[in-house]
Image 1 (cartoon, one colour):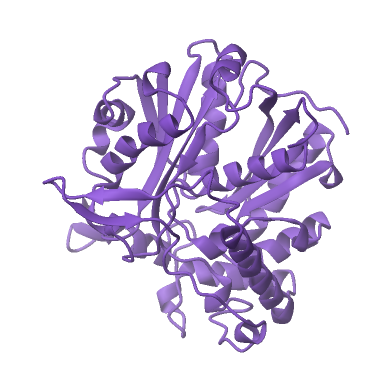
Image 2 (image 1 turned 90 degrees about the horizontal axis):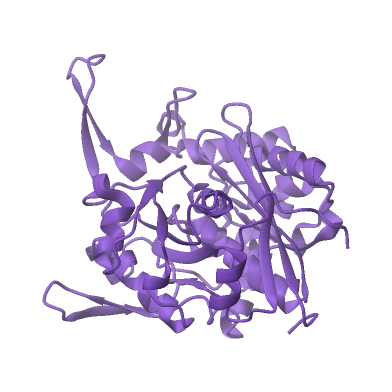
Length: 415
């Protein structure tokens, strides 16, 4: 195996100190009725305690989300107050890149020597998302009212294009995927085959308990402390039985069908970034070390978001001297099956050989925590196969691609 040096050699991810909720689809769970920020903050110490980590062992916090929440002005200090250990910290957001950015920024905090145990908390709730009223002198009403999720998905301010102007009424995101599919001359049969394969991967992982050590059932309580319900599955996911169910679906745009795109959902995820000493202290298995080798971002042509990750990955591989053959796990944030086929063409990589335990196209897209869950699934996969390099990537609003490579080293040579 080739050797590549970590970009932040003092920063480590303690193995196993991570976890989160399942991602129930829009309005299919009690998450729709709660303050997701406070809920995520209160769930964080519960999840970490399952991994034998006490919340008072952290000395800093980075949170990430994309949808406005109550008291967002107060960011991470407020969230840490919610779980009873008052920490300094900050909040970040970069659309669907938020989760991976939070991990990279946490590594930088540890590398600087400022902090030794950084908690990462990401969350979002698409159900009952807020609407905002903004002053706008450029319109006759002098105000704009924005429904945070649907209006931003329906209109791209960088291009001025609104998907709702299209004959089929699709969002600008769907139009973006269709436009990129035409650029790469994708075949709908292959895209449908990829989507069907992704569902099979996910249900195999669920049925065989491969996700049970990272996804936890969480009770949702009302203000009186009464149980509103239990979130113990990625609610709202179909069990497609045959490839023909995909190939027979109506295309919303070129190579984009209902089964080949993700859905709005709710959820949270947490993990840690620490010094080497702290990682050995907190890790579920001190014999396993995990470090960030490097990260990259790329902004592609306006309206072609699905190809941006490919360019980011190419730059990252060139910089690190690694190749796709060096990767033991490849996982991505794929809002469309189109993304996977475009990546496959750009990197000459077999799309069957990625997303071994599922992907956001299937289990949902709460934005903020999505790439943290993706990263954790890939790191767990790397441990199962005995260690190696892990590639994580995804796209984000604004035609941005983000990618990162991690290295997992297992002193026992496997599990």
